[in-house]
Image (cartoon, rainbow over all chains, first blue to last red; front, side, top):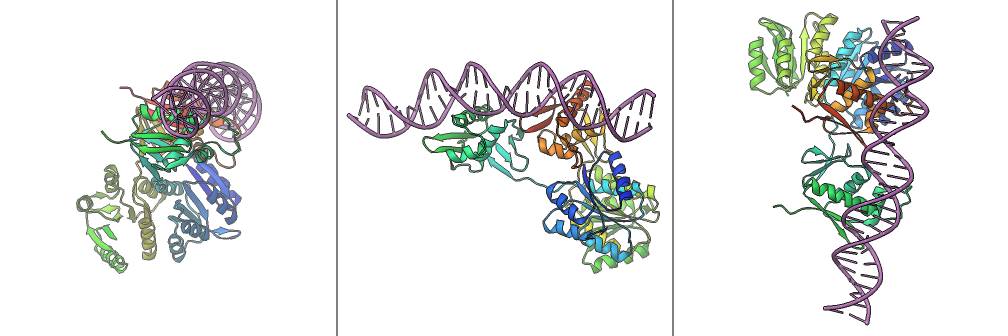
Length: 226
Length: 226
DNA sequence: AACTGCGCAATGCAGCTGCAATGCAGCGCC
DNA sequence: GGCGCTGCATTGCAGCTGCATTGCGCAGTT
């Protein structure tokens, strides 16, 4: 569990940090809105603990920015002010919970747990062909639901081919997809990987075939059914 | 939006009913736990407003029953008592929010809106794999019911892997889950933790295996064994 | 002060990976 | 059709990369 803590008072920071750490969470800390924006954009957090009063503005603006860019990370807002209009504004800005200072750590942690119980809404896009599925987000191939452990290069070949299932993939395109520009490959390494991949797919009854077209490239297609 | 209101005081019922209706919500009312159970089983609600003090018992038992049967309907608990242990117990029972009476209707409605915004699927409280169980709420691992004492980092590794049991977890993802930004890790610290975790799981006969896929990441799977 | 968790470095090793050798199939050219 | 050339397929091999494991010392905790 990775938490982003956005808070400027040093005392509060160290207290919260310690409490969270004691509960086995990994904490990143931002002392300002600008910093928090950077972190939230770069990294993936399971939840954000956000103070409203920050040196460079109102914390709620961060929430609005997150939601605008469809980032659904749970946000728990901490605030010194705690009157009703305040709370309503906080919650309606897109925050998931709102806690007024002073608060009890126990309650904060319980509320955090409640937020973290909800699943992170990242559903990965998957490409299918035959009995194969390729999870683009997690960069993982499964075959009939079972994970298919493939080494890096073979995985890259498979991905490149599956992204254009049933269509030609030029040899040069594949080369670029599998070997970066950095690697100077001058042999038939690509053929090797394709061959090994073929074997694994055949052994696992993947329901797909890789055809090689002489002088052009490769083509992955679903195998005709029995 | 369809709401189940579980409350026995007639005044409160009519007040809430009116307030909710004014916000275009459809309200069903149950005056007791028994009634509420029936309703919850028969119908599908977008959220449940639940008083704790009911003539036939504690409202939290309803929450537990819901969660036990994997019903993830968001629950907002209303209560006359409002001390900290009370709130913690309420939230940890599986409720999503907890509001002490007296409260402002405006806040109640804002919190309700916040709940209804969230995708409503609920995540299992404990993740299981082999003889292992990981209690997400209390953040502890047990093996055949016996608690398994794990240091912080190893626990984080285990959690990250168990959340995706049987599927690939990229090395980079794991790094993110285990280390924050502040920790500047430049070595094979992750491998070290994985190794130590492996040893402990093996010693304890955990019924799971951690596979490393070279160049990609790690994969935790159940060991085929009675 | 004892202890434990943690990061780090050293060492060993397995498997990926690139390469080349061999075989084969398509294709053109007589 | 026969023949040779060319480009892909496959497989064995060797180097090397990246992971596994273990011991050590520092730091934080009690």
